Image 1: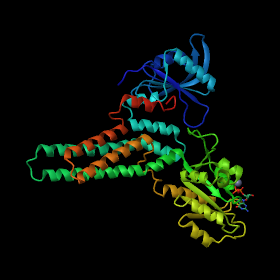
Image 2: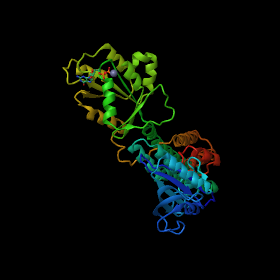
Image 3: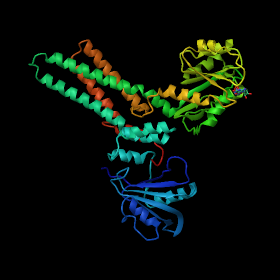
Image 4: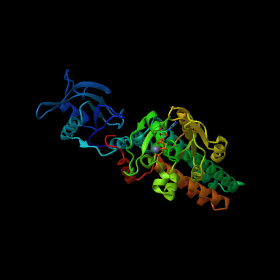
Length: 462
Ligand code: GDP
Ligand code: ZN
């Protein structure tokens, strides 16, 4: 275990709530709390049993003034998140008194924690591996319940386990090859070695491919499914937006890089986070195509993960409608035939023809009908009914995606090399490289500066 100084930070619990926590970790945590904490039975926190919670007051020893009424949790290392002695001071006061409390703790010798430093210690003290540490970061940022489950699964080390297994396979293969090379007098050794290398490389490559296939879903879970509502004026776009926003809990938007002129609304539809893009524009001018021009709107459309194309049940299918279908060709589209409470003037057979294989949902937004079906369609389209159980290992972190892609590419080079008769020692180098790249995911053999960079992205107090 490493020797560190004692750190402190305000660490607000997940979700909303009036409780704030000042967290301390390190050798001086108990000493500091004993200097500033008074409780009815005059217990010393350095003496009480580990993992117990105590009521009392925080008192400034210099002025003898009571600062806060608090609950203090005492957790002795190594059975803590950081493996160090940890004290958590829970107070219900506002920001001002929490800050005062933090200042007091710092004045007694703690140092203000850097962003992510608690998690970094957990990593450096061997409590968690790097992919688990990153999962903590994802957890903090998780926007929906489902995104949370992914983060939790990763934290439990599912991704780590799979990566470790693949690395083990590679290592064993390399060992076999070494043995074979050491005993070249046996018959067919070269042929066998070649065969073994090829089989294992293809196997690992395919496992990595499967992992990558889930990564797109992982990205969407964290960032939201970018969704654009299109349709002629007056078909019910704004009404659709409003009903999606009102029926579902809106998600707080604190995603970096959100520009001010493009307003995005987040809603959670049955676990699928939708990022409704450019809705302000749609609201104001009724028509995204008209407002920003055909070319620009094509660009916006191209970036979308999901298009909701709205038609009017109470009107014939027009040339404009058909142009919209043309513009979203090849994309994920749900066709919504709205205003079914009014007489049907649209030719549904024609709609089916132009909609090709897109899902068609009939709604009356006015009568609040068809919204359930629409939500079901969105959810099943995205999850394809098979991601629900959470038995898949998601890769939701862009650093992991980059590394897995790199590993997979290296293996592909190796396989190609073998097929064109490259010497075995070259192939060995590729496999070793793959093993190293995969190691970076779980924090084996990572460079110190990489560690610093990663942990500095964390929120303060975690
Ligand atoms: P947008 O121009 O596509 O955004 O359409 P709006 O959402 O602004 O709706 C245009 C008009 O159609 C408004 O008066 C809505 O109240 C009305 N409307 C929307 N949905 C329905 C529906 O399902 N049935 C009926 N009868 N009217 C609707
Ligand atoms: Zn509108």
